[in-house]
Image (cartoon, rainbow over all chains, first blue to last red; front, side):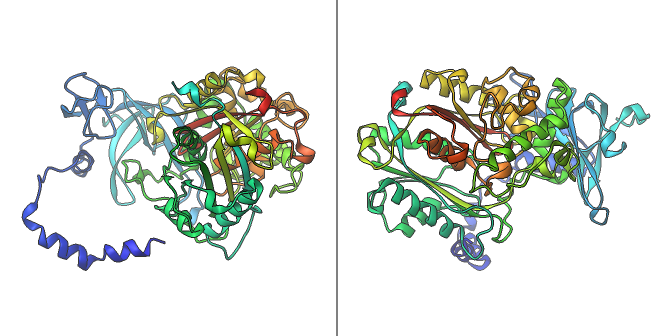
Length: 155
Length: 381
């Protein structure tokens, strides 16, 4: 499939074309998703807030999907949220076993896909109150959630 | 003046391949089989085709491939991809293009070797969700099912009713892949895949192809088969990632269906036969509610006791659906072709007697793109 594209985009050709254009480097400002991931790597869970309409924006975007403003700032979140819906991805034990997958409504408004990890995957319930932590999934930093009713107050 | 599309175009040819396992064929070869059958059904020469509408998930430039394969030089091409709903969306685009004279004979087509071809992931979406390893496309539908159960008390048994009804229809369709008897217990007790959806809540993985030919109303009677008219169509989307869906129990089909019914000038109670994109059992329940065949939250009880099965009050997914007939990755074509064949009275044991109006709802992505169409016989114009 798409062998012709692979040919046009061979690493050598791409490198030669980029080298030829090396003086045309544009702004090096990273995109919002990159900034989000950099914050996670520092252990910080930040989302965007629109300076014009005041609403929060997640996932990270160039513009506010509520009002269209491009004037967004990064803010810390309370970390509090509740489970909007939940499921269990069934997986053989040798592949890592079952894991939870939940939609979490953040106190600030946005909803995000994540996992509740301190409760058995099938014991997570809709409406359960949870708290955000920056953890690791498969060696990548990720926001995960704990059920705060179990006594964890790290947020 | 979108109302001008009502009855402006008609389906004059359809083609279906065999379904199931069609080994040693490329997706284009399977598609070409369906196209050849649609051309024969319409009684045209392939050179009359001047509009191509096609998309899939293994190739970027599908309309170009189709044009080259057929040896034609189309005046209009559309490779839009909205997921499995796209062919109903294409039907809207084809009606508009025909109406404006951008093309005169529109071909909408799809082919897939999902079952026997190399396993192909759709291109990565590169989102903040990747790290959580959602088992797409099942997980988003499971989350919707769970939320529907929570809000409305929908049960696993009610989800199972959808699969059992689809199977009962498939038993009347010689072309359907799965025709063995199926019980509520079989579905409820099947291996769990992503809670609360088990294996038999999930659609088939098939090889298969389908093609459809449309022309303007003024030429509709120049072909051998009884024309089937597009009376209404509506297309909406409200998210792509499931975390961005505003309400997991109400899809954009609420708006797409309202638009389609308004254009057609009919209401759900006028519809004789309904074809819904049943990639998962929860879909049928959501779309019946959103399209107005029952109230929000009552889908579970509506599908119970065989109400959408043969002999029930509303015939739904009369070919056996994606759950029991065929599901080659993107199913939207098959909805429309079953609707056309029902309105032509070509459906044998599963024929809905006297069917004049059919409604289809195509679904794309993770409950994201909803495209509703209403088709009718000549007397409904």
